[in-house]
Length: 434
Image (cartoon, rainbow, N blue to C red):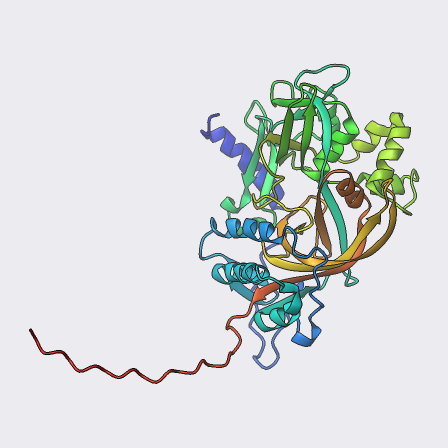
């Protein structure tokens, strides 16, 4: 194809658009605005707090890693248009104010003892917005991490499972280009058939059989464990330690466009596991002890992720490197990109043998730098835990309610005492011309 279009390709895409378009709600009919004295309430998922409602801005990490994460958000703002606006409740915030919100905090934490009066500083300088959460008002916090796998560049009995790059026949259709009549759906993903039609892409069970992607997708590497490969997809990026001694980093590139379905929920609904103490580790344990069920369980999720090789990372959905314990993933439809936030949730205390002793309170400044297929709605937050055994343990077990706040600099700085104006200096007499 080489980027060229054809009449048959356009006709195929248009047919998909027309078929899907009939399912979308019609554009609402405009109604007169209500009187100014009783404005029509507008539903929002962030509400601005009064200063006396602000939380205690205690950071349990003593600002470790925060400057790195602040810089990554600044990198995002440096490449977007100056006209971009961000929604905080009913308020629209311009790019400059978003940048100032981050640089002001960055300057503040560079002080010798920024913890001393952090609450006074936030109250003086920032507006704070609280997430209203889900239907019950809760915000559920989970965790994600950067997994590591064993692999090889050659297929063998030890390394039989392929890590695929983006297939050549996978296409995306930007429905915004076809007008607003298609409703809220924006991107359609599918595959291009030989007759130039666009149809849904192969689902997981078709890809896992090994033939669907023949000659259509590059194989980046082969890994030893299909369950670990599945969780690599869930996490979105990871490290592959090759049998040659080399290290390969892979990052999310695209997916097959089919909806993510939780295998944890499937194990519960099918009676295989109890919801009590459900965790990633418990799922892996069940799959290891029930090898005959593995394909059935994994294929319950039709979504499939394709990867690309890369350095650094992992990277969030805004193409910025995420920072352990400082980057969160939320639903992009509800919360402002790369914005400064503050969370209150729980963290595990772990003993020497890797057992969680208890969960204790956690609160810290974070940046909203990522999203995820399972992170839907205003009541979900995923906290990036980093890599390594603790990160995997914490991410796998984290499932706690908490509170999510967003911060943005006030429009005008607080009033300060004016400095004394020195008396004007005496004006010297002009020197005579030479």
